[in-house]
Length: 300
Ligand SMILES: Nc1ncnc2c1ncn2[C@@H]1O[C@H](COP(=O)(O)OP(=O)(O)O)[C@@H](O)[C@H]1O
Ligand SMILES: [Mg+2]
Image 1 (spheres, helix red, strand yellow):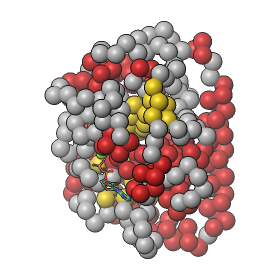
Image 2: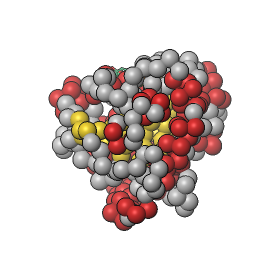
Image 3: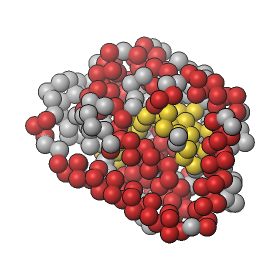
Image 4: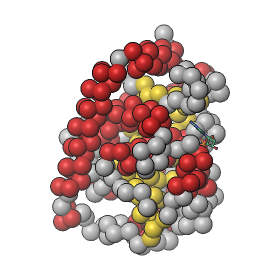
C-alpha cells in the first residue's frame, strides 16, 4: 500500500473508530491536554533573561490586529467561543501529533516547534489549514502561537486577515525594519500573534533562502521555544520557495485536498520534501463522515 492509500485507509479506520468508541477518544484527548498543560507550563517558565540581544531583540509587539470574528465565522473557521465543535474536534486530531513532536524537543535549538503547512498546488487549503491549526492551538489549549504568512508570492493570510498592506516577513528579511517586534501583530485572539507576509517581492526566493531567514528560524526555535510557529507556506510543485522554507522548519504538514489533489502530485510533493520532517498529511475537504469538511491527520 502506498502512502496515500495508507493515509486514506487510516482515515477510514480513524473515522470508524471515532464513531464507535467515544471513550477511547476521551482518553486520547486527555493526553493532548497533558501535552498542552506542559506547553503552558513552559510558557510560564520562560525567563526573559534567556532571550539574546540580537537584531530581533524586544519581545513586545508594537502593533495589534483586530481579527474579524464574523469573517472567521463566514469562512467556517474555528471560533474563540464554544461553537463549531465539529471543526474543533477535527483539529484536535490534526494538532495532537504536531504538538507532541514540538513538545518532545530535548534540545532547545531543535526546530520542531516550527511547522510548515504546504501542499502540492494552490487552492488546496494551506491557508485555511494553517489558520485553523493556529486557532485550534491558541484558542483551546492555552498555548502561544505565532502564525507566519510565508507564502510571500501569494499571501493568503493577508487577504483572509485583512493585513495585506502591513509590513511583515519580507521587510524583516530585507532589513527594512530594525526588529521583529515592529512587524509582529498581537491579536484579539488570546495567545495568537501574526506575522504578515509584507510586500510581494520579486526576490522572494532569495529572501527565504537568505541567511536572515536561517537566523530568524534559529531565533524562533530557541528564543520562542515555548511557542508553536506555523508557516502558511507556498505550494511545493510550482514554487522553489517551499523547498527553501522546508530546510529551516522541523515539521511539515502536507495538505491534500480530497477529490482534487492527484495521487501523483502528492507523491511528487513528498519526493521534493525531506520525508523525515513530514509529520503527516491533512486530508482537507473530506466528505467521509458525511456533510461538511473533515480534516484528517496521518502520521507514521
Ligand atoms: N476545509 C475547508 N472548509 C471550507 N473552506 C475551505 C476549506 N479549505 C479551503 N477552503 C477555502 O478554499 C479556498 C482555497 O483555500 P486556501 O486555504 O486559500 O488554499 P491555499 O492556501 O492552498 O491556496 C479558500 O476560499 C478557503 O477559505
Ligand atoms: Mg494560501
